[in-house]
Image 1 (cartoon, rainbow, N blue to C red):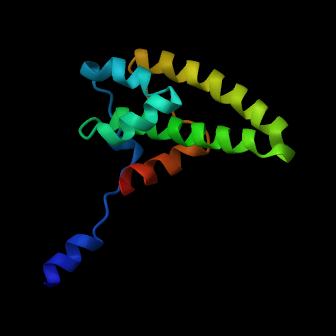
Image 2 (image 1 turned 180 degrees about the vertical axis):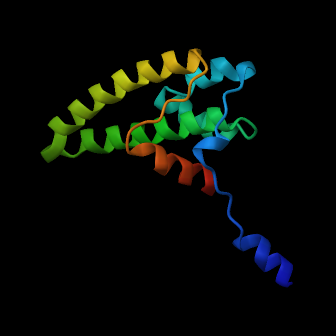
Length: 118
C-alpha cells in the first residue's frame, strides 16, 4: 500500500535537456508548430518528447491567442499577440526543419509542466 502511494506522488519532470530532436519525426515536429495540430500531437504522441514539447508550446500560445482575441477590452493585444505567434510559428518551423529546438519566450516553462501533467 505504501508503494502505491509513493508511485502516485512521483511526477514526471522534464527539463530542456530531455528534449532531443528525432530525425524520424521531423515532419511531425514541424506540424506541431501549428497550434491546433500541436494540441492534438501533444496528447497523441507518447514517445517523442521533442514533438510533445513543440506541440505543448504552441497549444498554450493558441489558447492564449483565442482568450486575448475574445475579450473585447484587450482585443488589440490579442491581435498583436496573434501576429507575434504567427511570426514565431514560422521561426519555429524553420528551426524544427533544421533539427533545432525552439523555446517560445515565457511559455516554454509552462509547456514543460504541461507535458509532465499529461
